[in-house]
Amino acid sequence: MSFVTSLKNTFPRPVLHSLRPMAKMVYRNNLNYLALLYGTDKWGKHWYTQHYQRYFHSLQKKRLNILEIGVGGYEDSKEGAESLRMWKTFFRKSRIVGIDINDKTHFREHRVDIRQCDQTDAVALRKLSDEYGGFDIIIDDGSHLNEHVIATFHVLFPLLRPNGIYSIEDTQTSYWPGWGGGINKPDTLMTFFKNLADGINHVEYPIPQYTPSYFDQNIVEIAFFHNLIVIRKGLNNEQSNCPELVQKEIRRMETTQISA
Image 1 (cartoon, helix red, strand yellow):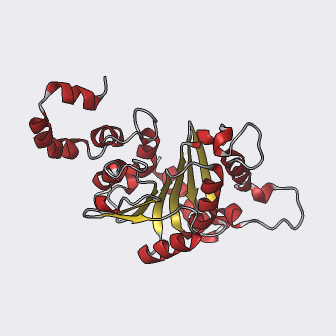
Image 2 (cartoon, one colour):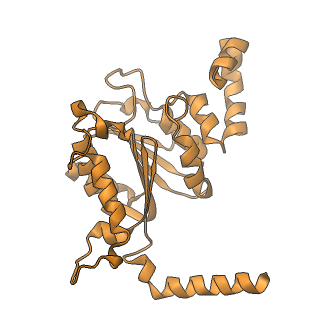
């Protein structure tokens, strides 16, 4: 029995409504519980929030711009925005933006902006990024079509702020023929991102005069989980070769050795 189901079976609806603000305060640092509290499937049906907790906990109190693609509820105008409310509670100083191909703008609230937008509309995505001055976190929970996921990444990752995090959810569609996927297909999202993982090591390629791509130069981490990919952008081009960062790391190591 889930945490939310247990509460519903224990308390009448008026009591639950009165307990919700207290529950948000108690569990506002725990994404697993917040997902259950707001009814998003990022925990329970899927198990994404345990990974997000690890990546996002140090960012929780920063002033960030966060974009989620896909508000939820499909064409049902009464459903959606569960995860946007979760992010709002967890990131207490951040602006949360959601986009959806269906009109979900009636779910707007303080610190939560929602736009009707197709995730493959490059012009609209760039305009939105310019309006907010870039995003620190981008979460693709949109159509999950392989072609759409890759096209959206091509547009939005270059617009992601330095040291930003980009995640793609429900990557199981990479294996589903009806969604543009399939086993060992060259144009699936999993094939695309696995190839980008090689690019992290492009300086080791035995290829004379190799010209690194934008993704080679800017991706510093790719993590693959069950149906979830998390990608971190570097601080600048060729972060690992930046002399200032190298010297900073050397000083940190020397300080650690002296302290020991």
